[in-house]
Image 1 (tube, rainbow, N blue to C red):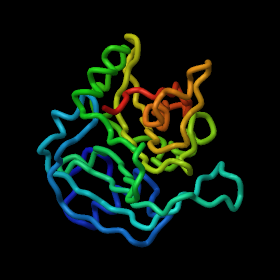
Image 2 (cartoon, rainbow, N blue to C red; image 1 turned 90 degrees about the vertical axis):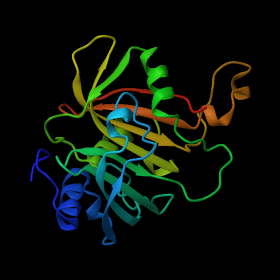
Image 3 (cartoon, one colour; image 1 turned 30 degrees about the horizontal axis):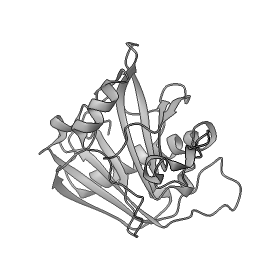
Image 4 (tube, one colour; image 1 turned 135 degrees about the vertical axis):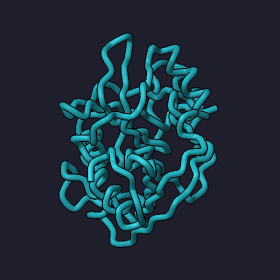
Length: 226
């Protein structure tokens, strides 16, 4: 099944989420249920996602294993990844892994409207969902981020992934994976007053990966949480 087909039942939802992410290779504890999207925070797309019926496929007790990691390297956390799929098309609406512990410096992602405002000021736009499935699975995109990006998925308390059509500074839109790592060890800041920047402004990173080439296009800690 490609991404332009309805997802009829739980089995099809699990199969589609597995194809798009490869997360089924890391756990056998997988469940699926229909939900309605609430409080979506994807910049530029949140309005069209809000209220949409979708399948949520949960991959539980996941410890990340990435192809480029040091052999035997263990993930810092045991994670649950929630994958959301459009019921009518099977398209990926997002991948989320939230932290279940306590960390006062771990701020929620900004609202979709706030993130959109910040990215618009930097000439970034998410144009919509690609009409074709990704060449890279979510795990492959995470591996690219590990080797070519900024921030280690193994050290992030939270991980967010989106597969979208994206442009920057007026360039032609292209299909990309957007991988946001939250709850990282705080990035150092140069200058005599660098460490006066609050930790919650320095402990997250968003990497944008070209799906066609596997190139990590850029990394930024924008948008900032409130």
